[in-house]
Amino acid sequence: FLVKLKIMDYSLLLGIHDVGRAEREEEEGEEVSNEEEQEAENGLAPGATVGSYGTSPEGIAGYMSSCKPLGPGEFDPYVDVYAVGSCSGAPQREVYFMGLIDVLTQYDTKKKAAHAAKTVKHGAGAEISTVHPEQYAKRFRDFISNIFA
Image 1: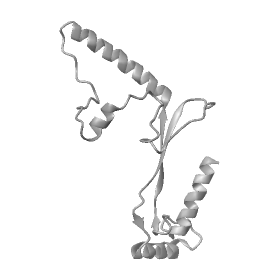
Image 2: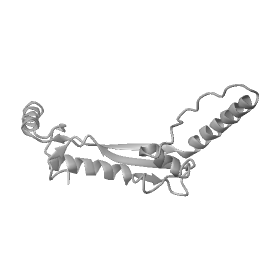
Image 3: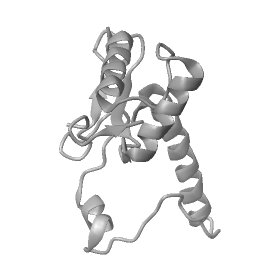
Image 4: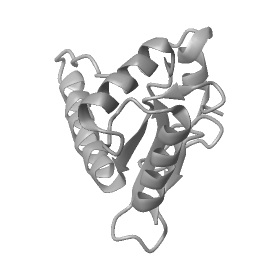
């Protein structure tokens, strides 16, 4: 698809969510929340909750407030379409998010000129960044294959 559009210079973005760490942070947050409730009962004003949003029915706030909260390591496959959980026998629970970024660089006249100049300077066999979209796609697929093999 990207080759047909003559796109190059894209990258793989990989995010790793550590479920165990999220659970620990959630427990710590609950402890702080319990302390705030006790302060409120004692007549002290509770602090503002980080990440609290309005519940207007419009937009994302309405959608988010209508959904059941998910625990650490859980995700909604209809919303988090790029999320993949680690296998059950993995040493630690993780959720992986993958996506392609920087997909707007076209192999146009400017890139062709840069490719020609770098080829003259470094030689035809050199690994240079400005390459034809077909060559870039092959290099990208090879890289992905080496990482996930």
